[in-house]
Amino acid sequence: MRPILTGLIFTAMLAGHAVAGETPKKTVAQLDIADPKYATEHCEEARTKASGYSDHNVVRTAVTVGGNLVLPFAGAAAGTALGLKLDKKKDKLNRKLATACVSDPLNEEIPLILAPAAVR
Image (cartoon, rainbow, N blue to C red; front, top):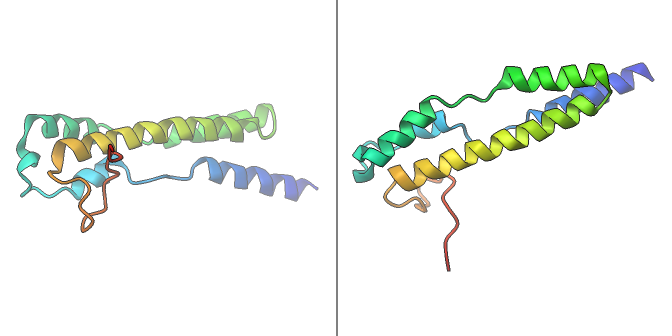
């Protein structure tokens, strides 16, 4: 029974660390510097924020493992909740980069950015 429980906890920890989308630093690295919007002040601000972005992997691991030590599976749930919150922050920053630095964020040739939904 013990190996099964350990396997379940490990699997839950990995699920909590699943990464959705690219980090803003990778997005900035893939931006086209020839794009006219790349040199704008708004783009520069967005790139500065992206360069300071952190995934907080140490914090996620500490919350997950520490919570599992206190109450089994509670840490996995807390780690997953924290991961979802941080993923929303990452997606928001990627959208800001898309609107500030790309002239046509819906360009299908460069699908690297999570462009804002089209308004109808």
